[in-house]
Amino acid sequence: DTAVSQTPKYLVTQMGNDKSIKCEQNLGHDTMYWYKQDSKKFLKIMFSYNNKELIINETVPNRFSPKSPDKAHLNLHINSLELGDSAVYFCASSQVQGVYLFGQGTRLTVV
Amino acid sequence: AQKITQTQPGMFVQEKEAVTLDCTYDTSDPSYGLFWYKQPSSGEMIFLIYQGSYDQQNATEGRYSLNFQKARKSANLVISASQLGDSAMYFCAMGPKNAGNMLTFGGGTRLMVKP
Image 1 (cartoon, one colour):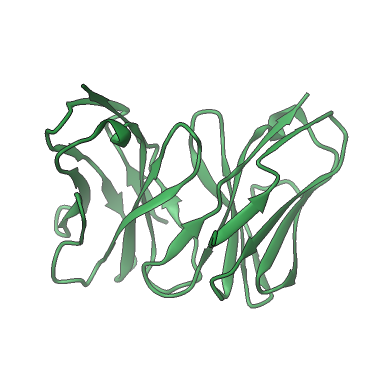
Image 2 (cartoon, one colour):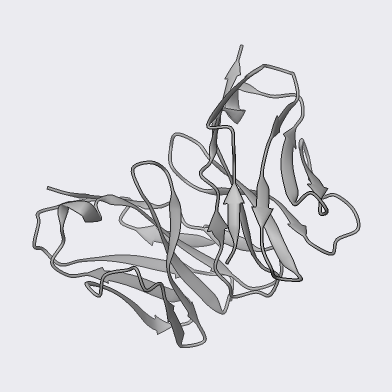
């Protein structure tokens, strides 16, 4: 069973559209995250969501919004997509010390 | 603020030889965790190894070991007996020791294993 799964793996969409990426973890972890990996492979935190407490990276545009229907799910919704949003987005979850697992990534391409 | 530096953008290693990937860090936190991840060309982030700042012994996981030198603020990854499948990007990351905290990543090292 996949511990952290996100869908879709690939997403191609036009500028201005609204899209969502879904993430689910079956590990019972309390904390989930979204990371962005840019074209130079640099990974940066976007959001951390821990027991309904949202911690936002202030550099993330407010067009990006995480939504957590329950502890096992953290979805990423993006409004009014721009060309610069093209990247790979990773969901992750953590709980105990040393356990920090990532999903397989979603490659978003905005055209 | 935390900072991770990986000074080797790319490295070659001969198959079956050992290789060390460098990672230095900077933090003012008294306790923290250090992670290494592998990202193959398929794109997923694969967890390799973890070291807590107060762990007495260096972490090992199969062919992976972490050479942790706290005074020098370094956490180098050693891969023994390299295999062709080890060719990938490798990322060093750190975070506060408590669960539920964000990781700061280095820029990565691309390792290429030569047959």
